[in-house]
Length: 67
View: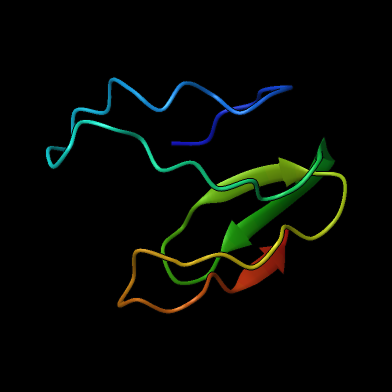
């Protein structure tokens, strides 16, 4: 899930199990450029290339491609 927010979102309410808390990662400033991870397909609209973060595909980092 990608969420646009001016502050860190609430950690509670995640339905994926475990402790019921979201684990949010700030990928960068929202903008008009489209980037997609070539590993997991996550699409992000950002002002510049998103920060590197762990990807759900095998514990590696996202591999961003500008669209």
